[in-house]
Image (cartoon, rainbow over all chains, first blue to last red; front, side):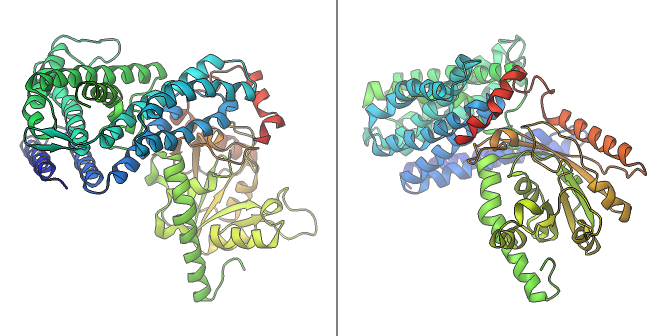
Length: 310
Length: 245
């Protein structure tokens, strides 16, 4: 593992140890209160941090394979939640096949194909396969849902993996590799979620999206944006090629659109009538509940950095 | 052939069943499908016990087997249709040794024939867990067919053995009758409390059915809203033309 990343993971370790210690203290101090959810969440964070460490410690192909698997889990959760027509089962198998193919383009670092495969080719061919199946009732809704699922869980998330395929770039404190960008984006996106949650708990007064996500507050959002942007600016010299101004912009981008991804997936869950998308991650819900912000931040952060630096 | 008395043979069979779980059932069920289980702790850890479940798919028995602790899997025996699994000798051998099935002649006992449940009695006497699909067949996707009285007959002889209902939802989407390639879909499973045995056959089956319906209500959207599609459309999709995929 690259030197800077080793220190960065050391930082995560410190944060997690502090979080676990604070929870343990709270549990001892207030035995009457229920901290199960917080405890489970932090426990799951340990697992996720360990997984990220494994993913970035080896060859990039390991990280690529894991990202593809995460896309698969997210997509599977998505199609299990939304109503699908029985007649579309064979189409669905083909749609699943698009996942390894999309990540193959990433592995080949074939940017042109990576960027149009799902938005153009799959988008056009999926309805053709459905026409062959022959059922017209609910056609538009079925084609729309399947493609929407692919765009969020596969196309968007695969941008995370494409960061690994970017060439090495000069940075303030040494060469910047894809792994560092992945780390930067993931940590900021997830910390932004946590920061918004904590600021909301602390100061939250005004609901910002009462019908979609009643627990989200304006105070939480603003606190999250400030925290994340500060951290983005602090970490940028070591993990990214950003100038200070660009780092601040990236921080604002990640925090605002992390929030957007969160409420968009909330709206979909509300539409379907479920609270959590699954039970894969104790305390968090399903894979989709953790990927929600990333479906927005991964492509937007990627194109921000790709346009200005590569 | 069913339950060998030779300890080496018995150990060998257990190893085959573990191999099946490791290389077929767990990859298919945990990676291919994904489970959300309610009240897994209600499953009987030790036999003798009867687990009754709804039947929609060839994957049902794998889902049920993977709910049990790995070490107790060799003591769990799925009851399976003899006319399907025992048509070919080698297939029967595989099903018996890798999956541990107990073949049952469908249609109940006729005059002059052996009791079709004989092997089930032996299994329960040996303290094993029996898996039974009381519908007898896979039926229409995500619909509960009529329940067959075999469980009741079995329970008459073993009134002390708990009958635990399990309802699975989602397998009718993943691998319905008539298709050969499973599509990854999450499966929801609800385990219920033991169903009390009633002296009257029809009342018992009705109570079993209402138990299934209750469990379905816990994990599945109300029937009708299910796929949010009119019935005629569901029928269209079940016609044989779709089976060619």
